[in-house]
Image 1: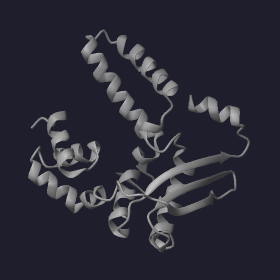
Image 2 (image 1 turned 45 degrees about the horizontal axis):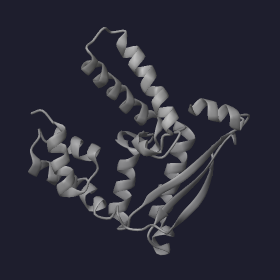
Image 3 (image 1 turned 30 degrees about the vertical axis):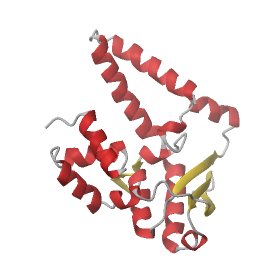
Length: 207
């Protein structure tokens, strides 16, 4: 069964889960909405989605230095209460997120955070590449969308494959922690430092 935008949106409106989570659930269940709902529940995504609108004013700012002392990360991760912020599970999550940043070098937390100038530059490059195929305009736009999804998966922390379990997205790992801890969790920001890299070089690499 074709998983179109309409049925994905219907599942999202019903559950509050993210679009990508809904699409994956429908894909895994051959487009069956009820089975997809059960899939979201089994994965803890439905439980996590119900908490995502709640305010996160506590949390941790943590530092991670990669072995060899050539890469360092500062990261801020928020939750709802100081009690949750001090739990081993939350501390483990923060450390794993910092290690992900050190290893995978994302440029931002989520697709919405990608600077508009960077996004437009990527789109223009992808359109130029796709145009060389000689395909019709509507096909070219689909090719651009596919390349843009790949860009987000490589460049946005929550969209990246988790380094310790490539079958899982970093965002999935956060949702699992939300379900387990019982509070909303928000990755606020991070900064990655690499020995010998100037701020100018870092800015250019992100453009």
